[in-house]
Length: 233
Image 1 (cartoon, rainbow, N blue to C red):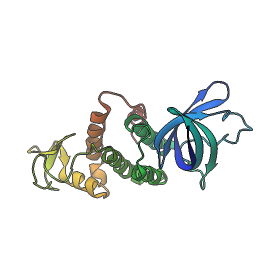
Image 2: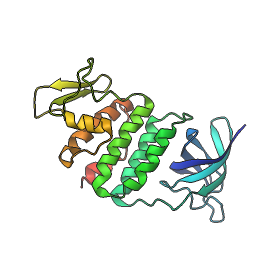
Image 3: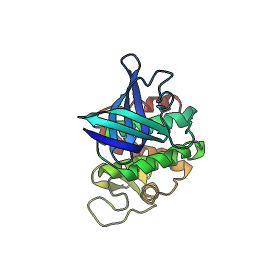
Image 4: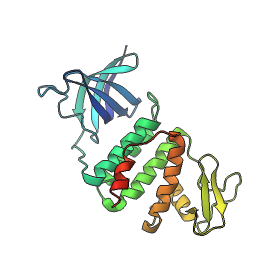
């Protein structure tokens, strides 16, 4: 049996279990993604009641036997982070990426902080695309599968901001002559440097990251992008 005390976590997903309990997927700072049971959490008198919503930084304690933990403590850290509308769906998309792509019990403190910093920035609709693209890239980098975006695939030739590129999800950028296709080099460089992408390049950045993420999903489908297809604005 192992114990964890006052670990910083976010709830990624929850589902009802038995009459009054919940199965939780947590993203923790020092343990990575973990799953377990919050017994009687749906009872109004439970100490956990109302604390298992997503997007809120919490301190959690648990005991663990085997793969699943049993929650023993849960306390809020600061004010609740309430996301509504499109910001909420962006947050749920980030949660789904973590659930689908990160292995359990693999600590990634830098990715945890990238996620924590993403959430409040989703409140500004003008910056949602940029912060999501940066988070997606941070996730791929933490998994060790992000290609180098500043050099042409298989060479030391630097990416030019004025050229166009196709992207190989493993090898990286491949120059193309057609100026009406591909990804502008300026987009690749901005992503690699953590800089904002100009609004007229939002669609290109989305195509780029979608291709990289779909390669890692290997045919599995995400649920949240359907919302964005139906609600493009």
